[in-house]
Structure formats: C-alpha cells, structure tokens
Length: 341
Length: 217
Image (cartoon, rainbow over all chains, first blue to last red; front, side, top):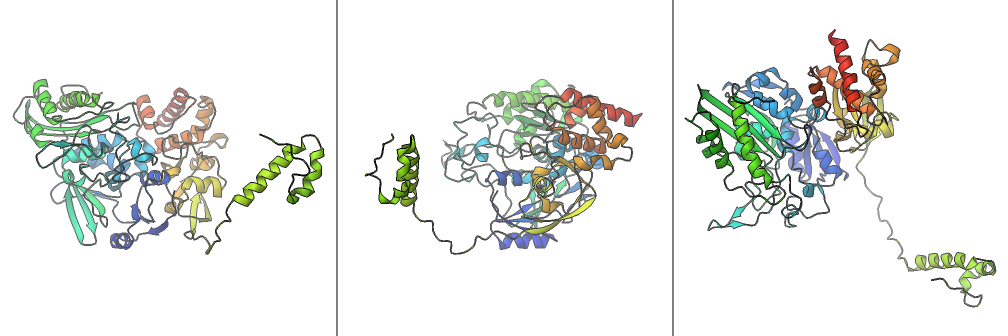
C-alpha cells in the first residue's frame, strides 16, 4: 500500500472541499474494494477522506412514494430492511446474492456503485490493462476471459463499422443489476451543488476511455439512491449463475420484474449482470414482452433481443447462450411458472 | 573458477591475509575476500541523503477492544487486523489472505462481523471491537469461560489445524446476532465468507446448528 494522509470529513461540504483541494484524494466508506485495490497498488490515493461519520445513514420515504437509501447504509442493513424486503424484494435478493455477510456488513450502498471490475488483469499490475493504465492494451481480449463481457465492448467508427474493443471488463455488482431494473436514481453532491443521475446513465460503456467507470465527476459524492414507487414486488426474480454456490461473482445474472394482468404481461424490466461494463438493459427487448402471454416463446424472444450483437472472446463465449437461458428461466420464475429454488 | 593465488600475486592490500593461503582450503577464503573487495570498489557510492524521508505523521488512535480502551500511535494505513496483531498482541485474530476472501480475520464491530483486514484501524475509533480473546465476555451465560459457540466447536470437533477457527467462531457469533439463519442451508450460505482449508465444514455447521437449536428451545 502507498503512503497517504487521512482526513475525517464532518460534513458533505467538508468532504467535497477536501476532494476538490487534492486531485489524488479519494473518499472511503466501507473500504472493502478500495483498500483491497490499494494493497495491490492498483489504487494509490494521496489522501483518504473518511466519509463514514456523515449523515447519510438512513432509509426514508420519498415524496413520490418510493424509498431513499442513504449512501452510507450498509448493504446488509439495506437488504434486511423491512420496507426494502416488502416493497423491493428484487433488490434485497440481489444484495444477498453478492459478497459474504462480513463484506455486506461493511460495504455501503454508495460504495457498491463505485466498486471496480474484478478483471484479473486489472488487478495484476504486472500486465497491460487499458482500464488501469490507458493505452497499455487489454490482456483479457486474448487472455483468460471467462468472467468478461460479451455485450457493449465494441466501438464503432463514423460509418458504423466495429472497431477493436479497448476493454472487456464487467461491472461486478449484483445490487446494481437490480437498481438498473428498478430504474433507481443516484443523488450526488459536488462543488456546484446537487444533481441526480438516472441509473442507466450512471455506469458507462468502456468506449475509448475504459479507465472511466461512471458519470460521476471527480468532486462528486453519492449521497443517496432513490427507488421509484414501483418495486415489481409481486413478480420478480434475481437469478445469479456462478462457479460456486456462494460467495462468487456472477458469470451471468438476471434481475427480472414483471407486471401481469392474468397471464398477460403489462410491464417488464430485465437487467443483466456479469455481461457488460455496466448493468445491461435494452428497453426494446422489454417492450417485446408487453401484451404477450407469459410463455416460453415470449421469454425466448426477449432473451434473443437482449443478446443481439453479443460477442464472445473465447473463454466467455458460453455466456451468450447461458445468458439467454438465464433470462428465460428468471422470467418464468418471476411469473411464478417455475420454482425459485 | 578458482585460482590458487601465490604469495607474489597478492596485492599489498591483502598482505595481512597472505599467510592464510598456506593453510588447506585457504584459497577459497581469499577468493571470497577478493570478490567482496572488487564488489565494494566497483559499487558506486550511495547518493548522500539531502533530507530525511518524509512520511505522513502517525495518528493517536483510541481503540476499544474487548471492553478496554487502548491508545495507539498508528500510520493511517494500518489495518484493524495489523493493529490488533502487531500493536496490541492480540494474535488470536488471524491473517489469512489479507484481501477479505478467507474470513480468518473476522472480528465483531458493534456486534457485527466484519473482515479486520479490509478496514483501517483509524476508522474504527469509538466502536466496540470484539476479538476471539473477548468473545466469551460478550455472553452472560459462558460455561467454563467459553462462549456457547466455542464450546460447541470443541464438542463437535469443528476444526482440524485451527487456523481459521477464531474467524469461524467470531463469524458464527455474528451469525447468531443477525438471527437470519433458520435452516442448515442458511447456515452454510451465511458462513460462506469463512474458508476452511481442512474442510471441517460439516462439523462447523453442526456446531452452529446445535447452538441455534439450544437458543430456540
């Protein structure tokens, strides 16, 4: 770990000021990912600004009828919160599918959004990586890429031709996949004040700048995550497929939410984890389900549309078919046509 | 390759050593000495330090561990795990992977289990930290001075080498505090943050199940 100085922030303004004053400074809350990356010298902050004493520690009602999750509420306290469990069971399920109880007790909601990829090459400072060191190359494209992205990796030139990808890392979060499906809104505060970022615009695709994970400006601090009123509580499923039964990152995960009128679908949300640089959604694929019966055929059509344009890189090519099957199963489970265990 | 060096070829520098070559194997000794001399002469003189190295100042950190307040002088990057082991001699908490993957460093902070390797000591000021050394004190009913989880681990032989055990026990106490484990499958899922390379999982799960059953009777 590099040497750094430490500041304990006593207000959001203080935290933002400290961040503005020092380019190399970083916020720390749970620290479960940042400290790990510091031990690997992937992250080398000159100062850590401890934000854990800031008042962003509660879950409250919003005027719209949703819930506001404080950025410092731990993942465990969010997942086990009664209101979250009753109104947003999809979110609760997703959080509990990730990490271990110890980590969920430490990790915060804001930090979950800010965690970085678990790409082996990003973590190994001895290998080229465009995310860690822009311009050095991507070791994963021709390397061991079992956990890597199959969607959203290509760049396109002005004529629409596909160019070589710069990065095939995935976003590792489970929680964020559910937040994408629920269309959460991220509340942030920076030196110019407060603003909101729709969840679909928070994380980004790698493009030519894979070292930038999200839309947050360097001086901005996440203060809360707002959940809209509709939590798809009646028909939902978070399905996570991984190499171990527990405590492993997703190869593919699906957050599915349905609204039904009898067995006709009136509204659908599908977000995928483990397949792209951000939680993957495609509103056109969801629209295909509206007005359709809850059948295998409807689900398969949506799955095919979601995976359109998917590209495998060898060790991860199996994910294309795996993701389609996972979508079909998760939608079946959300519609209660299939058992969830 | 070694050379037998005669008295005549020895530079005057080594005259004091010249007589040793009359002894068996002495050429080896001389060879080593020559090598050392050559290395010393060819190495560049180290640059003279123009200023003393500047490290960020240490902080006075007050930790409350097992009910006792202790003041320590720590660098900001000292993890809670290193503070416990290296500065407080509480070596019951183990360092396994140091990356939050194995659970050997599990301790309780305000009754909640966390990985001590992934938090800075300075961030834990004002919190109640409980390690394996103090786990029995957290329980009013501690037969033989042991927490029921500790006793169950002995009764069910829930370890082999024992290295992961302090973390397993603290994690199990955290699991009891959380109160979410209702079935054997729940225990397995909610203990997945603790790895046991000896594979004592079956007995660990039985030990925890025993204590949950005692509590619900």
